[in-house]
Length: 193
Image 1 (cartoon, rainbow, N blue to C red):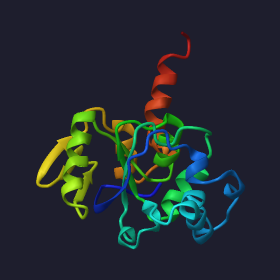
Image 2 (cartoon, helix red, strand yellow):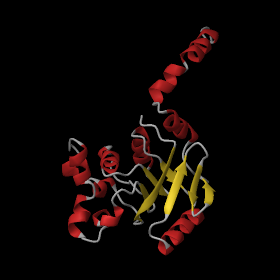
Image 3 (tube, helix red, strand yellow):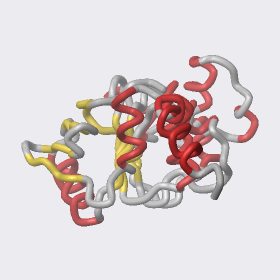
Image 4 (cartoon, rainbow, N blue to C red):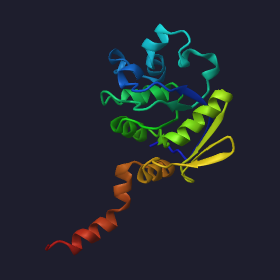
């Protein structure tokens, strides 16, 4: 797993509700190979249909935190959606709700999906309306999102287990392997039960 401790970036706002994985990466591109192909496939339909779509705007280049609308990543379970976002430069997503399978796919690819309560999220959106170059910091060790000098804790946040894995740059298998002695001791103590 790619390590993720903290990240500061200007925001890529995509505040639409129910953005599904087929919008993120259309079905015909799910087998795309390589970063460039995945980045090109990212929101390819929306980019073609709308010249002013957020991923077409030159000022979005280099931004790595997406501010996402509710129920982001719904639809199919395609992991290619997470791959395409990562290939397109997104390293973390902040929103009020994410599809659980999508959030798991992102986590397995080292991209946290940070859930804020609607009030905190609304504050971030209001600040962004005033300043389109607003920078936001996600810090998994501190469990915070910092924006405009104010730290917001993750009220519904990111699963502490997932956060720990990202900070330590290990996956679930490595986590289990670290606990082999504890597992063996438990099994020995409960053999006859």
